[in-house]
Image 1 (cartoon, rainbow, N blue to C red):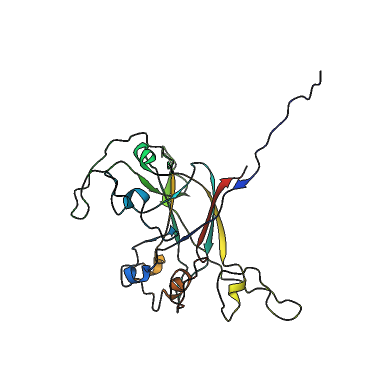
Image 2: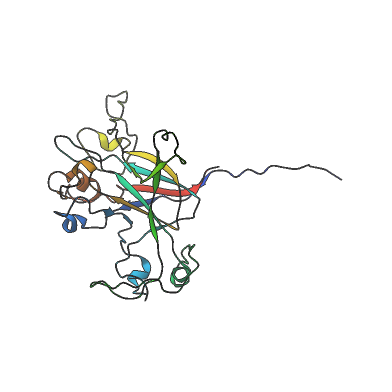
Length: 268
């Protein structure tokens, strides 16, 4: 008899396909002049509505936004593009992260059997508002959070305290100009994403990677104007024109490969 002994099996890193997240087509017309604290949520393949909302499934708000399905506990790689407001005192746009739990009702009624962790499939609290009133199944949502450690507790205090804040990611570095090749022409670090810009940035990296752990059945991403400009309205003709150039049609053409790239997987 052969005795091979025990073997240790290690899980290797494995990530899925990349999802390109962008605002829906024509978002500039909807958001122009709206308050800067009105978020612009991102979607995949220009599908801003949840599948069940599109099918008008009873118990689902007809304006329920689409999330990106994921597995709780998996690793999430997010490539965040470097985009700033334009003009004097420009500021980077923060990318917000939110999570949503789905329920057994959603799982049973979705065409692709979406993941769920809320075991209830009955109704929760109904909507009594004037726009889309009616029954609602339970779909909670939450911001991604970060803990900020407070100062040393005063003498006699029972507990130390940490403040939990909704967390957003801000890219604070500028785009990098690609290197020069032996013939003096800019080398292409990336390609096929944008057509041209005089500085050569279209040939170089434009994103910074943010990695976190999935905390829900769906990931939701959104932009708001920077905090220092949050009281100003969206203005895609002037102050927010670079946002429109990246995600919209300010250049006269839309580049569908420009977006926030997301991939889910495991990273032991």
